Length: 244
Image (cartoon, rainbow, N blue to C red):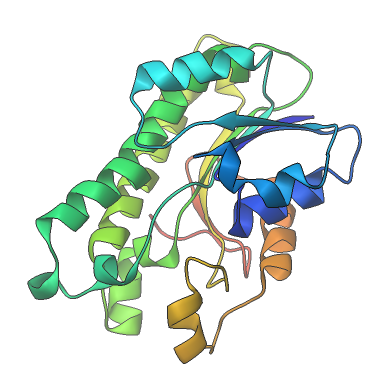
């Protein structure tokens, strides 16, 4: 099986590569913003991993050029994204610049991934194709009522991702191409995960956070389930689908 995973130099992306690479029948294309910052992966000398240098802020042409090294893909896991303290602030304290940046990196990059992977994801027969966006529980509008808080710019950007994924799934369901029509396109909430991106908050509020290792098992158990419905938003912690 061939995977394309974005943002593999740390956190969830890095752990996904390590786990999937254990199976020699898997081949992983992984994107990193800079090869100079991917030493943790390069030091593993994995023969079934090909690193691609790509920034989610790059334009579509750069995505297309970088992906020319790919022959085909079975599964896309769009994991790359940004979050930091300011992007989850109350709106009165938020900056327009933070909305611009998170929307560009977390939402628009999803569209670029979809456009740029089209020639490769639906090229090779033999396995049901999957396009997965890594979202967040803050992209569930009901979370605002449940937790008494919103996700600020970060939550809005991930809701945008969920909407895009849902539209892709809807359009694919009407496609004349059986590989598209039968594909699974959905978003996942990996849970509150202790990663370098969440470290500052998780250290002060450790309740409910899970390890990266737990997260990876939850993700893989979810994305290869036989009862998935394309276009849905799944919580990998309990396996339930959000009402999105």
